Image (cartoon, rainbow, N blue to C red):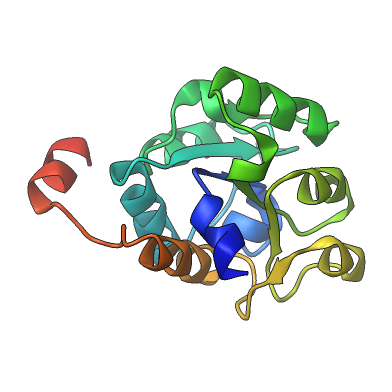
Amino acid sequence: MEERFRRIKAFVFDVDGVLTDGGIFADLDGNLFRTFDAKDAFAMRMAAMNGFCLGAITGGRSVSITKRLLTCGFKEDDIYLGSRVKIDDFTDFCRRNNLTAEEVMYFGDDLPDIPVMKACGCGVCPADAVEEAKEAADFISGFPGGKRCVRNTLETVMKIQDKWNIDLELYKQKF
């Protein structure tokens, strides 16, 4: 697994069930709300500051998803909302960022994520993913979605690549 982790240049995430615990709150006006883990967000910022490309491919359509991910170092063009065939968006992400599929780690937790998990360099799922996603994954986190699955995995990859370090001045400027 360590060799796969050394090849990674980009991280792509499903949102609901990976960056969140899958719970969605809805108000009477139909607005949807999600809870994101601050430690996961910090790890994504560390990845962005250390040269990794970040992407999100989600079936969710809320503008709040984009707004949250922009605060974590994502580029707006690398956030795919309303995705129904995720492998198509994954292919586009790789093409636009000059990446091979093998250079990308993809995090997914459910059936629509499986084609991408099988196509990428390293498919990751949280501990509470559906069984089919676990079977397709190359790495199963010991943490559930929205509860440090992302932090733990990104930290591990960046430590293996000797990139788990923070430039506080850059952090202050960027975030």
